[in-house]
Amino acid sequence: MDEIFLKNMSFFGHHGTDKEERRIGQRIYVDLIMKLDLSQASETDSLEKTVNYAEVFKRVERIVEEDSCKLLERLAGKINEEILNNYSDVKAVTTSVHKPGAPIQGILDDIVITIQKKREI
Image 1 (tube, rainbow, N blue to C red):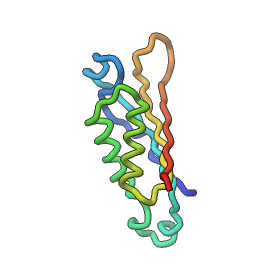
Image 2: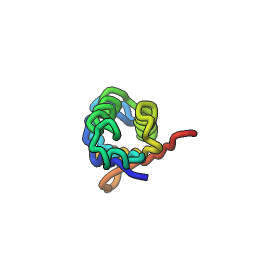
Image 3: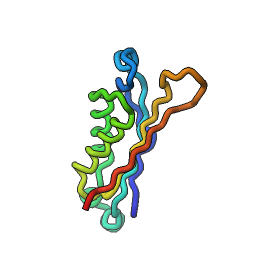
Image 4: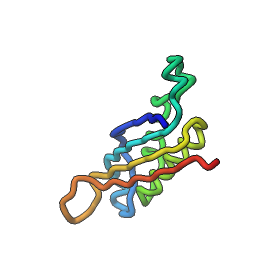
């Protein structure tokens, strides 16, 4: 299975269990991998035979910046649902949501939640 990988998309969102965190907001990063057959696109050079990743970026941007979730797990789940509901050629999607500014007492680079969803047949 082939992949389209949108790596390190950057948005500003209002997600978290802490009220202040949801009020102020913070930078959220998203990685998205869509699994699909890209053989026709590679042979024809036709946008109609693939998924328009600029359009996917805008869909993810809307979800991250306009919705507000307590859990990153829910945010990743909403993104996966959006992709599978709107792109029938995508057989599976994996979304990783990064929250480097998580309010944790301790030293760490990043919190990452990864959720995978496959199309039900």
